[in-house]
Image (cartoon, rainbow, N blue to C red):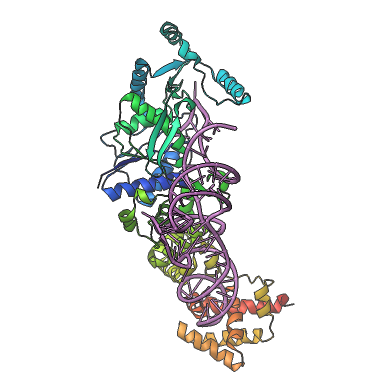
Length: 493
RNA sequence: GGCGCCAUGGUCUAACGGUUAGGACACGUCUCUUUCAAGGACGCGGCAGGGGUUCAACUCCCCUUGGCGCUACCA
């Protein structure tokens, strides 16, 4: 099998988002699958949009997914540096080569002139594009302007005839008419290369075999192919996975919310769930299984399975999948991961005694199976940690049960009974509760529902006896009396 | 507007000329059950439309329609 060299080439202009990371996962899986190399290259050529901290996001996201790169910024490698901002001399060298060959030229047009020209073209419903004014400049004129220090860019001279065809491994051959391509800028007036140029130079020098990037890049690929040709280089293979769409079917972006990849970490998605889900965002193994370990993904991942149409990001399915992984995960691990949420909510102290940790673990063992995301832990377990519980008596189910006339008697008798028993186990509690119910000649539901509400303040939750056993004798009895007080105080009309 | 990509249920996807069009999420009903989840069972719901090609089209070709993307000295 061909060993690929693939690169994940994010631009530090914002947080790492779902689309970025999906591509990085595809890159990584492809590299692992073929025994190839996964390279991280930072495309920091836009000084104006540079966002401090963006780089750290990328590192953290990669780290969280456990998809380390083989060559890149920190670890280095034989094709560094891996920051484009540190490779300016290389771009300069090849840009000058293109100018000398006559495949590129200096342009001194101001952005005002360009904007006006574009406006004019649009008004006349002409295709927009540079009018090549500066191509008419004589070598002497160009040299003079450069000498004077007039701000200049370098543009690639796109052939006006013919067409450019390339093969996208996902879609097959794609052809563009050259005359519709603009004489695009390759070196900006600040001396930095544009994406188009830098990525071509770097992908070649870094010996990238497969350029994997989202579908939105298809229309600029012919520009890249033209540059490879002009430089006498073989173009790499192109792989364009589909765009990821929001629920409204437009390209997933900030306005859809929840596109920042690390938000998912913070909300309590498990990395293995994200890996599994993201791998399926635009790729299909072609079988009915859809829950995969990372190793299975590595074994199965292939370019043929990448789909050719945009895919909608279905958060509900992600949540379902995360729930599956939480249920499968080890209790100790889930407990550990839940602690920060509980601490943040002020439900448990920052420094836990071993008793407190045991209690928390017992609580989570009861609720683990009903979490979709770890942050759910706060609202489903809070009653275990609060000293007193709110009854939210006006809530429909609550009022229905607690307003029944037998309730005060039931709670009083149960409290008295529980005070007497020595063991507070699931079995002894069930026996006790049922016994008190029988004494009052009440059916199961008439006993269990009110007791649950009195003890937890909730109408829903894990099994009542398990819950009571975890809560322990003191909390249970105190809550029974507390509820009795509330009912007496007139909450029960 | 121009150029490009794409088109199976609400969403993700299987089918690679011959299937009662399969699976998953979501949704609904039932079941289990002390409640809620989870689990189990069942169900709702799809080949965008029109032409061809073929003995036979979801599958191949063309057109239409629709969706999306690109159209910067941003990536």
